[in-house]
Image 1: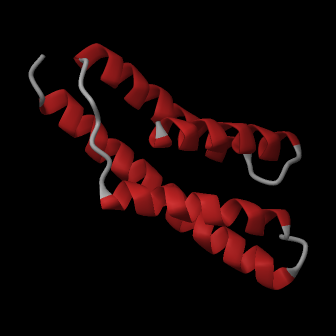
Image 2 (image 1 turned 120 degrees about the vertical axis):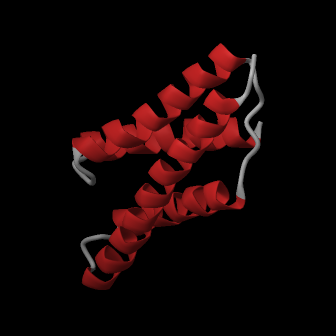
Image 3 (image 1 turned 135 degrees about the vertical axis):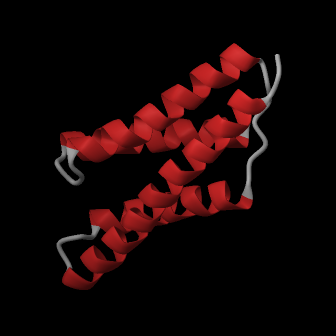
Length: 108
């Protein structure tokens, strides 16, 4: 349940941040698309996805970046927030490709 709860939390915060113009729309589309694609692959392959440490690191970076981005009006917090966000987004998309390739290699 933990990965599912993380996805729901991230989706809710990302949508709120786009509405409040904290992050650009393209970031939200990239992150939500990754989860939708992986969700469809999991349903299609009927496999359980094993979480990797890199995936945990990606989620950690995003979860850490979100409150810092709320404090972005303070210059130092803006730097820290976007630093964690950029690393998190990169790792999140990278692990998405990794998870997708693992799901597509498994036989149904």
